View (cartoon, rainbow, N blue to C red):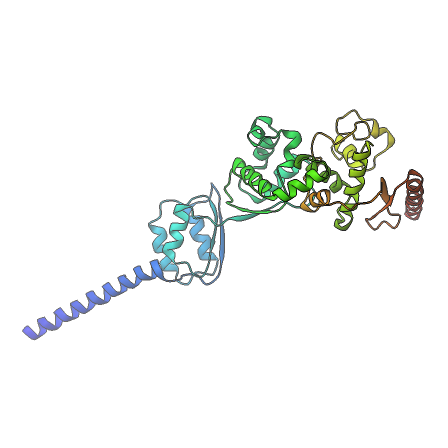
Length: 341
């Protein structure tokens, strides 16, 4: 009888140890073991539920032990809004804490291409960040909002330099603007400020001129030459007579600029008003800014599109040379139009 009791006791003890070992292994696995095979990217919106997040992870096909993930999610109360990236080093417990504590992975906010209006910028931000584009547009067109950054609507694009910015997906409009200003200040090094002064410009004026260069061409090798043309005009007291500024006056709705358009009454019309317009007519890329700071030195005053329609320009130092270049382009344009009939 004693022997049977002892055996039963030992069997019971063994079962307890096995159970404790299993529980201990579960705890260890949940807390320490990698439970994912591949990277998973999750966006948690304000309407995303805890169940939605769990199911997305389970359906990803990258979870090693589904029971482990279900166990830790049972104890969770909520998930924080944000962008999260899970990799193969993460345990179930780490992931649960990640979602509960909002340990976000930054996203890339990329500003590229043609950004001519605050609404263009707002749409780009709205497509890549959680913040609504309408809220961004409202902020960017409100002088009271911009006052904190020392600019108004006319000077908005002096603050923003197209680039790729890493920041939290849930950043507010003000946090996004703070980052733009921080990067703008970092870009304008003492050396670049000195380069602007050497051209007789402030950084804000350099941004304005760079936006005109951007409106003339996206062919980067030619931008320093076009910047030199406009700087020559400024120094000689000649009006800039820049077609992109006229296009800006008509909100870029013109397919072609006619002589009648040159009469528009606007401080941005550089055919009527001398000097630079009140502010940038677009968000100038770094290549245009650098072109204004380091222009090609020449005596050109005029330029027009090359009749080869290759995206380049022909430059001239005299008006007679310019007229000859303009006639060549017009003849080529007429020939092209006849060929399309």
